[in-house]
Image (tube, rainbow, N blue to C red):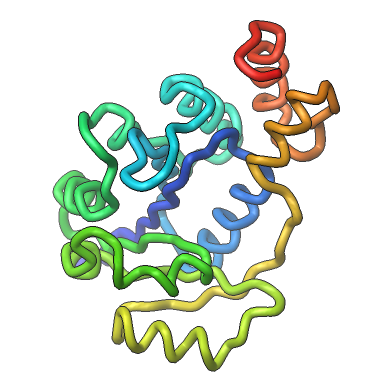
Length: 202
């Protein structure tokens, strides 16, 4: 019998994508022994303000960020789906697109704490495991206790380095005219420079 394909989903605003996102993707890739990794930019956030950059531009930036990795790709699942973006809907849709695959949804340890309050968590856990990224300073026993409480038997904790870079910081630097090179992949830096020149930020 052929082995099931192992696929992880890394969702987020990617507003813009940066090296921290790629580091998380790389850790999930090798620690889980994945066959494919999907970046899924949020379409319309259900509980937060809309992203600064358009969905199409964020997809283009993610494509540029992962262009060198043949088994990483960007999915337009949430960008093209109308209405609020819910992880439950996304994972159900991807489970249909990848029948028989073993799926993970990648998240930071900080998000696991509030996972019980997410929309239809049972639908997420019925088709996917959670790959929870643990960084320095995380209380490991508390994290494992939370995992057992909110998603019993469905969590894989992955240790990863932490990069002190965020999309908010990059947007602030763009607005201030500061350089963003070495914080984002080269292709993303070029797209952000064009966006700054066009007045999208700043």
